[in-house]
Length: 264
Image 1: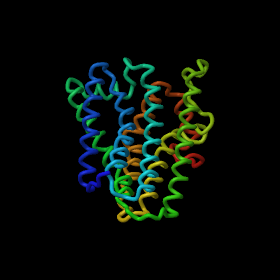
Image 2: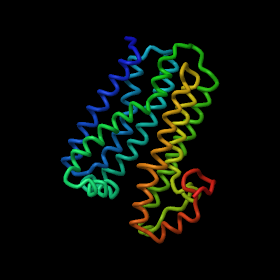
Image 3: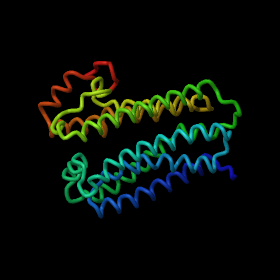
Image 4: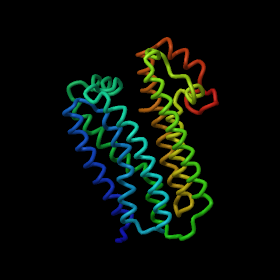
């Protein structure tokens, strides 16, 4: 097994993710559905993890732990999104259709740039993985064990929230209603919360390695994106467009993000 420098690992990852996203853009152009980008944004993390698992020089057990977490987490989310998107493959999700409409005549060129930025974001967010797999220390620390437990909680929590929402939408009697059962009774976005918690677990894992504090950038970016950019704002805007009265009432009775904390 070859050992490679951190820079070469980053370069391999950037090339792999950018090529994948270029191919996904071609597919999205053909089917006129940019929603497929979400699937492969999730799947790109297992791709990076496999590159690190093969080429990184760190302690093998540590590599298997962090890369295994990244692979399983990315595959679970990506497959969940694929199941959702493939049901209406030739019908673009409203939030992407809205973006496409705003971009006008240059929408496809901008979409290509957007897809490439998603690829770059994959590598940037993978900082905890890069830091951890370079660590040669043969001792797995308490922090790393705690991070694995936190990661497991986040995966189960996110999967539970996704399943509850999926079951709610499958019931035809719920058409036009807002899911407010299970975890969704306590938070408008429990899936986003547990996704962010997963990135916190990667950060905690990286803290056991040299320069691990730098990994805080990943959960910080995810939190910013979820709260201010492509997560909660676009989701809530679409919900308010599709079911304004029901969603406004739902907003009044639930927390926006963290379950059980009424932070509007």
